[in-house]
Image (cartoon, rainbow, N blue to C red; front, side, top):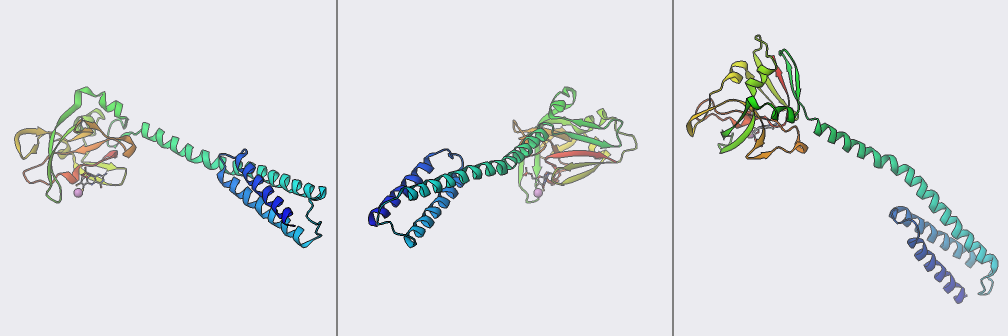
Length: 256
Ligand SMILES: Nc1nc2c(c(=O)[nH]1)N[C@H]1C(S)=C(S)[C@@H](COP(=O)(O)O)O[C@H]1N2
Ligand SMILES: [Mo]
């Protein structure tokens, strides 16, 4: 009887090793399940034999056959399981991939939209903006935020008023809203957008337009973080807290 148990133990060990070595390298989970299942079966088998007719320590051909049958059953189940998990996993694997691709496409196509009271509504890519040599503007803008933090930041972009002229802004237009993808928005009067003399209170010689920037301190915005367009405004007068007006990740400009 002891010998018989030893043989069964050896068979279980061999089976466990051989199963863990075969075929299911990329399917760790189904492999483990298959091994658990197999071990359960072997335990069942051992229990049955323990309770049933004792053959006196000899492994009879019938018992060997039974063991072999169990092995084959387990292996078959394993294959079926692998197939079903394959089928179940494939759509799960491809769907997020598709979503990623769509995201990439959206990023590539990040468009600055100009809508409302304009002769021609525009949908501009970063490339389109960069090609507008005649209205590109670069300068250091001074900023003050709500906490009183001040800074000078260099921006490169296009002159917003000249961009709206390219879109044939209507003479009836009164307001311009700059709307970001996160819902943040700023509204200006057409007169405010027209101004080309915003100031840097630390440098009385500067006259600054409102711009749509794509580059900050020599670094372009990362399109992964949103549309790479940011509204920059100088100060109206000394002490003007202008930084909250700088709208990041602009989705569209609406003229009303
Ligand atoms: N899209 C978007 N732009 C935004 C904001 C925002 O929440 N969303 N916050 C504004 C405020 S209140 C400030 S002070 C500045 C902060 O700019 P920073 O994040 O570059 O410091 O961004 C402004 N632009
Ligand atoms: Mo802010």
